[in-house]
Figure 1 (cartoon, rainbow, N blue to C red):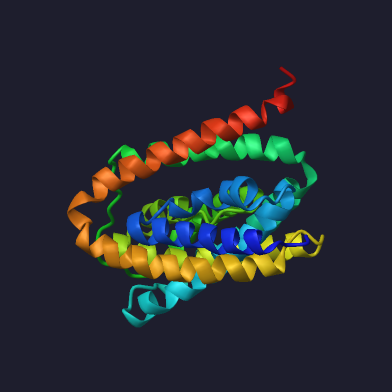
Figure 2 (figure 1 turned 60 degrees about the vertical axis):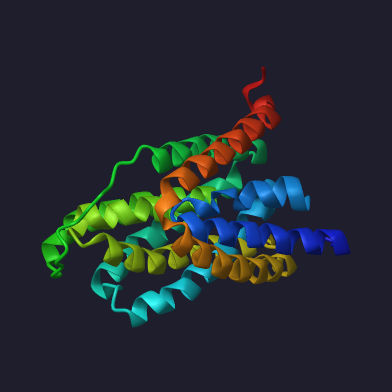
Length: 262
């Protein structure tokens, strides 16, 4: 698209909001990336928005993978085993996503946002055994879990970390911190697969990607700094963020009601 100076500023600002929320409250924080590009920055094509955000999410995931790798939190056997079927799922999901009506895709995305908001506030903690030893028998759970999460990730153009983390804990029994570190590889792989599929159809705005990433990195650093200071209030922050997500989801449902022919 032909971008105005105001849209460039808004894209950087939107990216910083996404990075800030992700750094502050963790999983689910990037769910606002799509509606911010649509309704704040002013990109009108839902498919272009999804392809663009998928690439930005992928970059940020790989960027955040590095400190977890250095800290020894990444379990590479599980990461690769989860990601291979997930990449296939992401390709299939993104191909399907490109094929359906944009308003229908946004309507379904809004429903997903409600699910994410509910997941953030129900206070169910998924925990693993702590220890982790790779066993080939784990593939029986990892392969279908990776394929399913990849399908959803590709279809909606999301990172899917809020699904990948419990999926890794369930299928391998690894600790939460290892699941978080390991999940970032899959988030990056799924997002990159989705973005490349959309880019092949000309559905990625490369300039907005750069602006979104720049804003996201700055916002993420600030969010992570505040997360340490506000760790005792994280539950309250999650409730507030979930309320914002619900409000945006309701707005998106209203804006895209036409797909139901009401």
